[in-house]
Image (cartoon, rainbow, N blue to C red):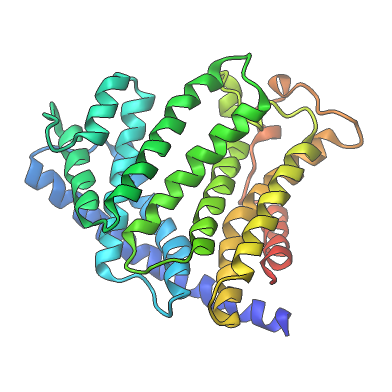
Length: 328
């Protein structure tokens, strides 16, 4: 019975995804061009494409999955908020990564947007989107608290360039940064989630962040950034952490107060995101082979560390993992 249900869900989802992504990308592109016209500026090409791609991927796989628990897909207003969210997050990443803003400037633009005086197009866009989202949110106190926790995790991530940082500290930063960033998106939907549902948002974020780190292992090694992936001396330790997070999210899904068919659909679709991390872990297992420890990753070539999701073997492994972990 589960096999048949799995095939139906995956087939339906895979059939709908390209069309939804195409439409979402079209709407995001139109929105960003309108912003450029209204604020008399222009996004750099990388940021423009990042916002469009992030929104079009995230919309159906994550946001629609959560609203589906409530019997519907996201509406136009929720989709617009998603575009604004990825506009904010992409621009903030630029401010942070390009070191164009001091910590005090980042705090001011994040927590005092009403009084912050923007100096360029990017800052104007960030403030416009930030206030758009902030003004919509109903529980402003909880949203503000979560925003501060997200900012703190980002600030703490500076310690990931310190070789003295412990693996425990890295894990805390990784989970807080990823978990809280994704949990913010729950505030942009017009549904009232249960505590278990909110925990699903957070746990999904922790695994998305860890997956990103696993896929970025080579890049982070070049930048001397310490993540659980670059610090890996035994892949089975990372796998243990990852499987525990999966166990936690599946436990949360099980107790959600919705019909089983809705929870099963949700579980399978959400598994399609976090099982990518397991594909990366399997690649690290092949590198470690039968040894007790990993070789020094710093001396491995890029082609060994890059996870190629265009390879049939990786795609097939991914599907098998979705089937295994998506089942309730």
